Structures are given as C-alpha cells and as structure tokens.
Length: 287
Image (tube, rainbow, N blue to C red; front, side):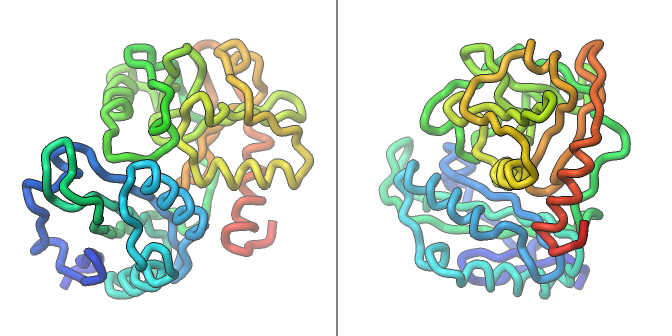
C-alpha cells in the first residue's frame, strides 16, 4: 500500500481511496464545519493544545457538541497513530475537519459532530524562512465582514479562494485582505505582521483576522525578546508603507517575509531572528 494512504474518521482508520462522505454532508451543503491545519514533526504535533483551544472555542460559537475525544487527549494519540500508519516521520501537514452531522436544511436536526483527519508530507520538518521575499498587493474586490465568525477557521472560504485567484491573475505571491472598514486584516492563508523600529504590530482580533495559532506564538516570542507589541489596534495601508519589515505567519510555514508591496521594499533581519526563536520553542532546537 502506498505511503500516506490512510485517513482517520471518527476514531476509525480507512484507506483514503476507498473512503467517501455522503452528498448530504453539511460541510459540503452548507459550509457547516470548522478545520485546523497543524504541523507535525515525527510523532510530535506542534502547538496541539492551542489548536484544540481554538477548535473548541469555534465549536461553542457554532453550537456544536464537543465529543469526548476532543475534550480529552485521545484525539492527539489517534492522530499520532495515523502518522505512523502513513509512515510520516518528518514534516507533515495535518488537516482536522469537524462538521455537524447530516440532517435538516439550514436548520440542523442535531448538533452532534463527526471529525476527519487527513495527512500530507511536506518538505519543511522545521520552520525555515523563505529565501526569496514575497511580492504582495491589496485585494480590494471583496471586503471581509467583521462579526463573531471572523476569527474562526470555517469551511466557508470563498473570500480566500477569490483572493487566491486574484493573486494568481496578478502574478502576486500573496495579497492583503481588508475588512469592511478598510483596515488591513490578513493574507490569503496567513496572519500579517509589521515591524517598525522596536515595535511589532498585527491587526487586532476585533478587526476580523483569523485567530491564528502561529499569530499567538509570534506574539509570545516577540514579547519575550523585547519587542513593543501592538495587537489591539487597527492597521492601515500607511502603516504598511512606513514599516521596515512585513511578514506572514501560519502553522505550516511559520514565517514568510515580504520583499515588496507596490514600490516599497522591506528587510528581513527580525524575521530571521524570530524564525530561529520559533524553531527553538517548537522543536527544542538551539538558536
């Protein structure tokens, strides 16, 4: 059997090529689902507890019942077993999807859930800074609404799909999503950070970015190394233009530095240092 051929569904392991979900699946029909993407290295899942805190928070917002396997540490053990079954011992991307069970139309018949775990080999077993800086621009065609769903990772990702298509059409590496008030929110699949002097900024959660797990780690790390942190205020395009460094973060890639926004050029000195510190925290690697 080929490597990486199993998935995990509700505690049972299946050959991925032989497994299918019902066409009545609520994630497919209504986007009634949440997901987490996690990085693993060997038999260790980075920041697993933080991922579960965010997942359970989102499930509460969506009025989903939280099964005991998620409340306990059993799910982590099941996922590690899946990594072994798929012979994945280095860099791995894990996607955990949680969806409300079938029944009802817009109004569900019940709030019980199922979960599905998929794994994929990736090259970065540690976090490494991109050698070539990203070229980015604003995505202005659709603005992100600010509400109680804005910080969640739901399966309703049309905004990010359209932003991705825009970046592809414009030959950009990424683009910045704005909220309904015109403030900077995030990238297509990442949170965004700005550094100006000794101050590190990222959009406030009240402005609608996904509450990223890597965002949380970078704020912790930057505080520990002496940065002045600003994560409770809105960020404008002018602040972006005034910054010395700009970078994106997510749980799979770690930090990706930005080279250019329009005519503006950025450095990456602090992005390098923060990446070293991140690896020290995530993998117990010396800086």
